[in-house]
Image (cartoon, rainbow over all chains, first blue to last red; front, side, top):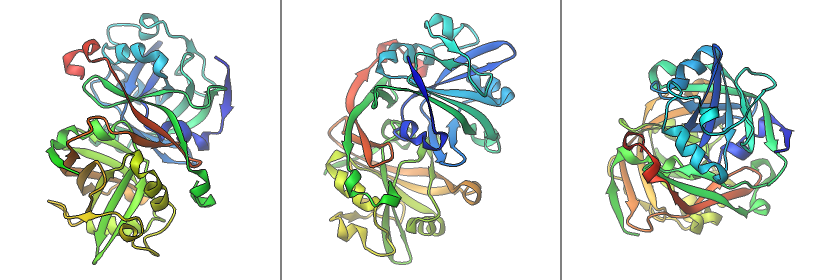
Length: 182
Length: 182
C-alpha cells in the first residue's frame, strides 16, 4: 500500500470520526498489537491524542516503559484481524505472525507500523500524569503516514457487544461553515 | 420521540463509535448548545466520559461554573442543525430558538436535554484537574435516556473541513468474541 507523509496537525481527519484503531508497541525486543476504541484528539499543535489503555493489556507496560506507540487505522477489510487481536493476549502469541500482519519500520519511534493499515501515526508519550488514576495516556503524534487512496476508507466503530458500526459514506457541508470553523 | 432509561455503565454503546455530539448546558438563567467531536469514554463504572472543550466556546464557562452538562446524540436527520450550532456562538443567539430545538427537563442536572436527539446523557463534572492545561473535562454520566428505536441510528462523525462520515450500517462479530471481551 503506497503511503504518503501527512501533516501531524491534521490527524483529526482520521481520528476524530472515532474509529477502532490498532495500537502497536515494542519493548525489550518484543512487539505487540492491541485494539483501542477509547481515544480522542486533544490538540492540533502539538498534535495530541488521549488514549485509555486498561492496565490488564499486555501492551500497557510496553507502552508505558518505551514511552512510544503507533496508532494504526484498519479498514473493514481487516475486520477479522481487529476482532482476533482484541480477543487474545500478546503475553501468549505474536500477533503480527498470528494475524499475518507486516511490521514496518517507523521513522521516529521503535514501535512498528502495521503496513496493512491505511494510516499510521507514530506517537511519543508526552504526559502520563493521568495514567495512575485513569489509565489515560496523552501522546504526541510525531509522524503520520496515510494511504494515497482511497480518500475516504471505510472504518470500524465499536459499540461493544461484538457489534461495529461502519462509516464510509460522506456528507459535505463545507459551504455552510465559517472559514475559521472548518 | 419516546425515550427509555438506559444503564449508565453502557453508554459506550452510543459514544465509543465516536459520533459528533451536542453538549447542552445551563448557567445563571441561560442555556446553550455546542458541537463536540473530541470526546472519549473513560470508564464503565463509574460511567466516565472525557471531553475537550476549547476555552473559546461560550459553553466553556457555563459548564465549568455549573459543573454539569448533557451530552446529546444527534442523527443525520439533524445534520443542518449540527452544522449551524457549530458555526455561531451562544454569546450572540439562543441556539434552542434559532435551530428549533426543544429543551426538556433533565432528571438529575439543571442543563436541559435536547428532545430531538436520540440519546441524552446527563453529566456531572467529576474531575477538572486537566482543564487548566488541556481544556479536558472528565464527566460522570449520572442518567441516560435513549430512543426506543431505531436500534442503530445513523450518526455523524466529523473529519474536519466541513465533511462528516456517516455510520449506521452494522457488522456483528459477536460469535468471535470471548464472552469476557464483549
